[in-house]
Amino acid sequence: MDGQLEDDARAMYVRTHDREGVAVTVIGGDVDEDADLLVDEVHAQLTAHLAALVLDLREVTFLGSSGLSALVDSHRQAVAAGTKLLLVADQRTVLRALAVTDLDQVFELHPDLDSALAAAR
Image (tube, rainbow, N blue to C red; front, side, top):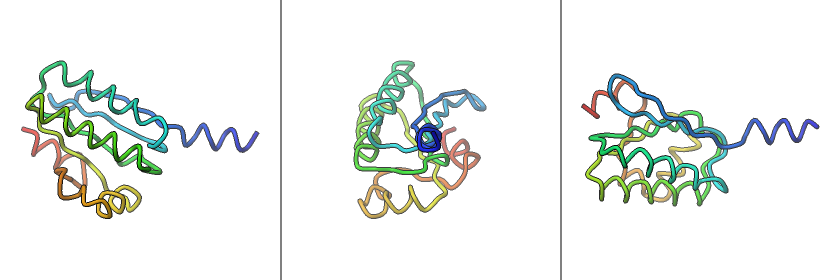
């Protein structure tokens, strides 16, 4: 039973809310096998023709190759839609994965939500 609780605690989740007029999608848990959830949510948000979309990755506990691919797909979708995509990340798990793959050079990264929101305006 403990293993099941641990697995549930690490399950990926995605939720979007409005913060100061900017769409903020919070992603948490292990972002790998279920990374299509992220791509689907970004696609759904982009259909609203947003000027900016913030992906808050501060609750991510693991970022695997499928998660990185989902972020790249999300970036492509945002560019095609003319939407500015900003990432919020402050923990080593995410920052290291982005740095090792040079994706930290592709995405606009912010250490906290306030700076991302300011840049989104």
